[in-house]
Length: 328
Image 1 (cartoon, rainbow, N blue to C red):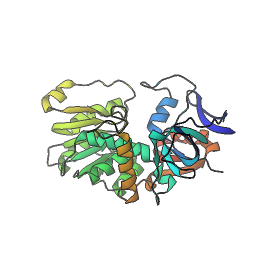
Image 2 (tube, helix red, strand yellow):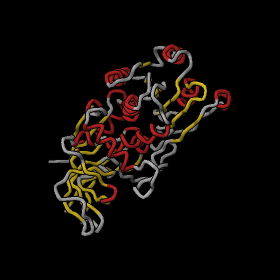
Image 3 (cartoon, rainbow, N blue to C red):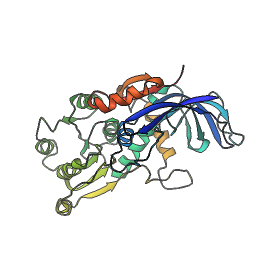
Image 4 (cartoon, one colour):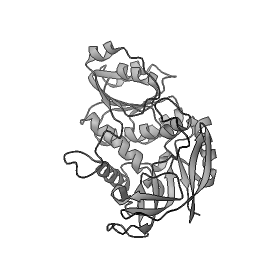
């Protein structure tokens, strides 16, 4: 059987290619893909060969796949054919996934919304690392998909107020509609002054850096309160020039929150695993507490994948989430 997958041939060049679909190994599932979510920050950085990316081609992108179980390996006992599942698999019409790292999509949750499961889990581990407490003030810098989800999870965790900052007005409007208490555009207002006004002059207890921009790190330091926590949730694509006196003077705590710095499996007790966080994200989605439908800007056929990436490259401010549809 033949399948199709997205490939980055070289910087800024996106193609579709055919591949041979192989049967699952004993502990794997063969999954027929329904939808995959493009992760704009990571995938565009890889496509553009930015700093802190592999810069080796070809690349096969994607890590948010929703599909239907087609075949089951002989040692898999907890899945059935026909079930809708989520896995950190590539943009491809058929994928194989370890049963241990595949998750059942809850009944009643649409596959389109479920496709945000992985980004949700990535954000959740960062929010947990912030150790947010009820009533603490929080700021999110950057309102792409990661930032939009972070603002919602901070709100659900009891942060008050939640402040959202971005240069794109429609992203600010989305964040406001999804529960942010205040939204500021640095090109329109003095964000430092506005943050002081809404935090009783103290600055924010927590600042989530979700832009990936080297320049934003210093802004995060300025917006944080004394003894504030800075969570580096976005993968910074470049080198930041930091005045460490700002950190020293305020007693700031800098927290690296890459998703790889966490346990993956249940065998790690006393830690939140990725499985824990995926299940938590699904529960929040089902209850309507985490809203991702509003983050879907486009649903396009997989055959239009090159155009989807072009849209993210050329008109980044106009779109948030783009889903690739793989069903015929």
